[in-house]
Length: 315
Ligand code: SF4
Image (cartoon, rainbow, N blue to C red):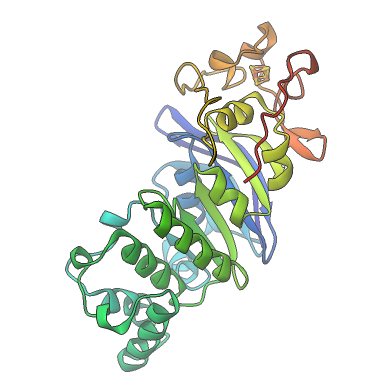
């Protein structure tokens, strides 16, 4: 359904994404994971044609290169075939419209339904995502964070798109609401193809069959979610997992030293990698097959001598 080939995105001299290659087949859920600033949201926005940067490469949706479409052609695809739930629920809804009005909007704007029909469908969608009719005429400031997230999901479903992009769907939610939203997304994932942008491994583990780990605008590890979480190979994936708390203890938590940077050459993770060798700051490693997944590392992942047992976690 979706194939991204050699996608690079730059803002002026700053390169945000570089040589992204990945595919998403119908019915699949892929998680894009990485710390803030790695380019996850830029990738999602570029797919839906709302990226501000300069894009090169191809984003093929059902064989059509979305980067070659006019804004008019893209607006036919946006909401109708590909929809996005934007991050930051507090600002993503229009404060001047009721949530019923906001869910109606894509249907009416695209001429798919008359206003009375859209009103009925919007009510059904809001009920489907768990918002009772008592709240349909409420404005965003009258709703909880979880209700706003549900309203955004209903809005994304309005025109029945086949591909949904969810940007941090569980961030800023309390644990109980987060669990409810994940359950809702599991149900939605049975009928839609999804790209889930997250920094949360438990969200990826529950929803996604495939995971792509992004660092410094590049995919550094890509493969089946279970394999990546249970036996990560790339030093960055391992570092992320070591920094992630589990339900029972925070005893072995370790942060990744240093800060995200974007070196002009070499491996983007080299300034922070404990395995780094001279070649790493000279040449950027290709993403190649390694043990059932793709890994971009000159060492093919962590070296056996330094391998640490039990880094992978079960979720
Ligand atoms: Fe570390 Fe070098 Fe592998 Fe990059 S290529 S992750 S710096 S070992």
